[in-house]
Length: 87
Image (cartoon, rainbow, N blue to C red; front, side, top):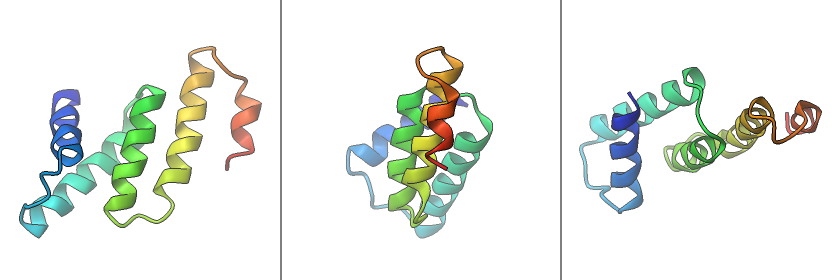
C-alpha cells in the first residue's frame, strides 16, 4: 500500500491536480484510510495532513500533528505526554 501512497503524494505535490472529481475523492479517501490505519513515520503523517486539508478536511493538519507526535513517541524520540496536549 505504501507505493500507492508515495505515487499519490508525489503526483499531488507535483501539481497534477487535473483529475476527475471522483478520482480525487477516491485518492483523498485512500489517504485518509492509510493515515488512520497504517503505522507511518512522523513526516508521512504531516504530509498526509497537509494533503487531506487540501481535500477539504478542516482539522486534518492538527490531527496529523498529534499522530506524528505519537509516532515520534513510539520511536522513542519524545514522551507521549507531550502529545496529549495536542488533542
